Amino acid sequence: MNNNAVVVIAGDFNQLNCSELEVDLGLSQLVHQNTRGSNILDKFLTNRPDLFSSATVFDSLVKSDHKAILVQGVSNGHCPPVQQQQQHLKFVVYERTPKHINELSTALENYS
Image 1 (cartoon, rainbow, N blue to C red):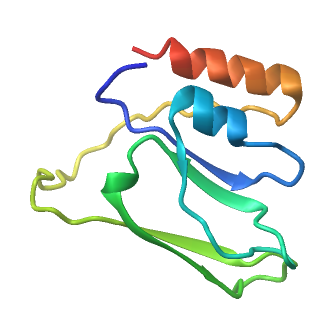
Image 2 (image 1 turned 180 degrees about the vertical axis):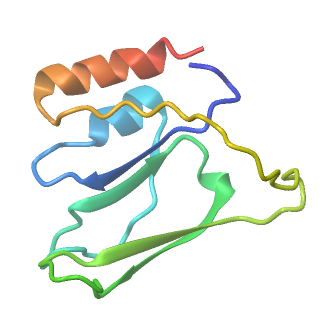
């Protein structure tokens, strides 16, 4: 994995065991409060937990049986000012089937 890459994987991980992502890819899970009933189903995984100051769980503003999560970034003065220009970002969305989770793991391992 590219040492400069900041990886964030977030969402509803209802039946997915994230321990492999955490151990194999060195990701940290930042949500530590229940997000649905007595379970933490909504997670925020990252390889750079030092860039985030907190993950707050609160009642959702939309109709949902899950709570909402707000993750705040750290302002350390080292970030360059944001320039107002159009940027094209590439997002890849993976389904949560074991086959796709393996593909995601491989993509993260080979990212450069």
